[in-house]
Length: 199
Image (cartoon, rainbow, N blue to C red; front, side, top):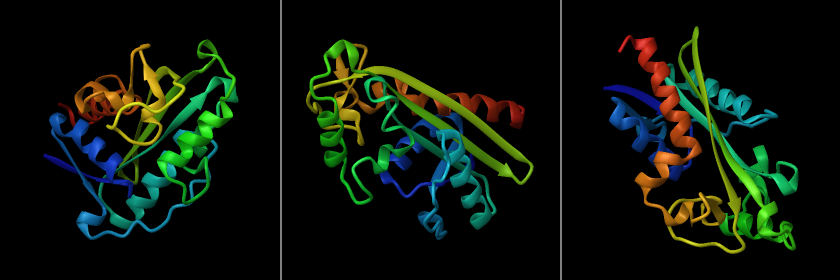
């Protein structure tokens, strides 16, 4: 089992990363559980890929062991791609998921269902050593609902409707992992890691 440090302080995201990577022979552990302080990393990138690299490289510099970081967010067509890379900060630095969802729904007031198309995007960056950087990306298309539904997941999951049926927050963890942007990105990453390790 190969151990990777997850460059994230988000417990929900760390659990999701570990859940997807584990069956593929990779153990994902948080920096905190390994006694490593990641500190605050300023996400100054203009794309998800740039921010994922910034987080992974910072974690690698602090830990000296393989690190995986992801940057992900929601892009809504009617809002010209917002909130995008600012998904986590959409309603301010200390806002809750509820605050962010309320702002999103407020900004979409009056927008009909057929124009509420959106996608989740996830960019993953894995730094194995100073000379080896592996990246992958995944997307999931959907629409933004008119009200939150479901109690699973996190972030914008309660308003992101996949396949015209349920929100991400109404899916089980297994159902979500099978179709989500993060699931797709991590499976792509694992394929590339398999090639790297010669599996």
